[in-house]
Image (cartoon, rainbow, N blue to C red; front, side, top):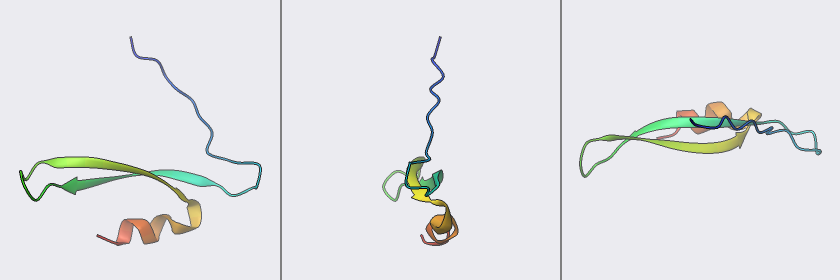
Length: 51
């Protein structure tokens, strides 16, 4: 069985972070892959808007 890992993205500095998962298509094979990044909450929309 797989373990469930619980981690907090909040630091003591008070800035909140979000884990963002984006689906990206490979130009070579055409298959889809997932990219995961951790970004501050105020930059989530900017991160998702860019290609």
